[in-house]
Image (cartoon, rainbow over all chains, first blue to last red; front, side):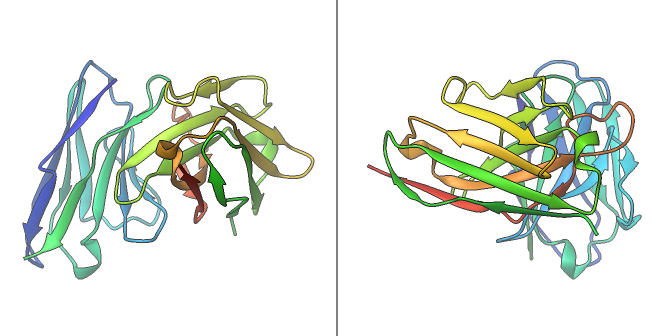
Length: 106
Length: 122
């Protein structure tokens, strides 16, 4: 199952609302997760089952969608949110990730 | 506190072999499926292999199938990845990752190690 994220690169300012899209090559129900990764660090789980916020993740992060189209929204960007974001499907092996969306400060 | 720490990354020649280890603590290892995920320099994440909690069911990415074996020792709280017939394109940081405890979320990773670098030279 292929996952395609858009955009691949995003430039935004602190306080902006941003949305990242992930499209699956076939329906995956709600079996989608989102991760954040900062340079030199391991990925961090943000959201699973498309819209469930992982424990201790700030509420400015939210996820939605089902089937083949999903979104990750950050309601008000904070300085610590500038990172790369990946979607991941877990409905079937092999597990696959999107190519990533790099979010940078404008 | 949940901790995962990878060991075994090294510089190896093409065609060589390497065994990676992931030592865990802070949770009941035998209760959770585990995976290895890699990241080539400057690239995205690629899931490599997964193993059930009991160790009886394993899964592999097509890119490594037949060359890689994932195993675990639940008595030692350690996950392994045996890499054989290494290729230059296997060069990456290899992360071990723990499955989320929630129901119906097998294959979601709530804890990750910091990674170990495997470099394959030509």
